Length: 115
Image 1: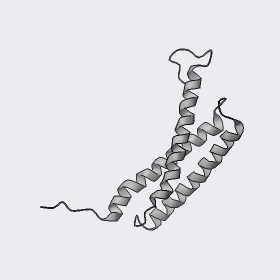
Image 2: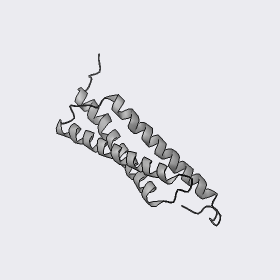
Image 3: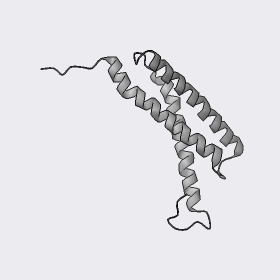
Image 4: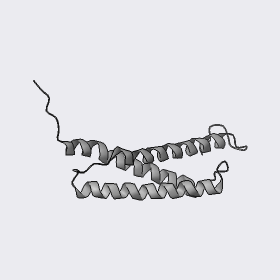
């Protein structure tokens, strides 16, 4: 007895749709961090560059999402397109982790106090 394989469009919808939403969520959080938080450990030019790359990637993901929806989930995205988005998310996570680490060492912050 064989297990039926779902059509490619169902697989794409199940995997790609939430992945694109995740990218948009991470880019939104990263934009908020870069625009509104003090990041003393990050040069201003690096912060601006990272913010520009986040905004560009966000537009790319939104475009890919629109195309995916316009084709009713029948068009995928080449994995080579996803790799830079993943790398950018990792870079943003590193900045966020560094911010959390530097906030813990800030004088005047109470033990257990939230950022």
